[in-house]
Image (cartoon, rainbow over all chains, first blue to last red; front, side, top):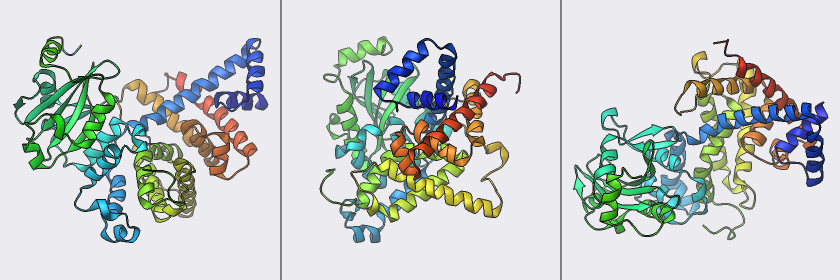
Length: 254
Length: 179
């Protein structure tokens, strides 16, 4: 029984060679007990995986990121390793954004939108609940009331209550997304969000210097690198025209 | 970042890998330690150790495997020191169960609790094997290397662990009579 179990488990783990796999699959066809055992093991495996996979969607606690920040910003360690050149004056979140987005760093694919949001949330002053910019949802972060309403109904290029939607685009998978700049908050932000059934899901957020935030009448060209590279990775075709945008607003972005 | 320019890793290389690996490191730690606060303490300890010996990572080897090895050793140290102190968990009983920060639906919570409890029942070496292979998806060869045991030891630990987990979960899963 134990030998069978080990074979079934190796099968589930993808560790059997093709000959062993075929032999097991042949045996399974005529052995309902073996089939049931395989199904039971597979079921518990899937529950375990799903349980721990949920950790991936949690924001990374700020104190863990701070370990990397101290090292990067610390004058002595920068000098000792000769890695300090780019760290002068840039905040950790700027460095992080540069690291993640701008350098085309190969780790980009492994960093989810949820992590990015978590990273930045960890860096920013705690917000009172009633003026929250984003809310945690089942699978990421969603724009809260004020931002969500701007994304839903505000034409690109118009600035209202400190929120400017800079452009709208269609994403590769078929949905619609918009980039924005929010300057009327303690920490001005730029970002992009995509419309899902659950609301406007944050794709990327990046902090802005206040003087940058004041200067956003120009087209999206000046968006921070992290936001630009997110859009570049996601966009299908050209940005939407004002007419297309109007139509989509009427259709609630469907 | 280019890969093949230096032999050893720089501190910047290790930090860049670490940022991307953090969610997985936290997942692995949760599987080892169970309690979320213990798990994040473990991640922190492993990060600190890795940053002081960053040059030991070879960019041609998998970063996660290197970190998992460091974290596993840190966890073993932690268990030993707890045994000397006489097992004291980080927090009170109520918080001793990991609740993923998701929607918290009843179904999800119940499934989560029983997985957490089932994992807690395993001997530590079996839990390590499950964390590496099932949770983190390492091959048997990679997992055996991280745990520094022969393949046969790994596979028999995995088989015992999976059998125990399957029993625990099927018992708990159907037990809606037990609140």
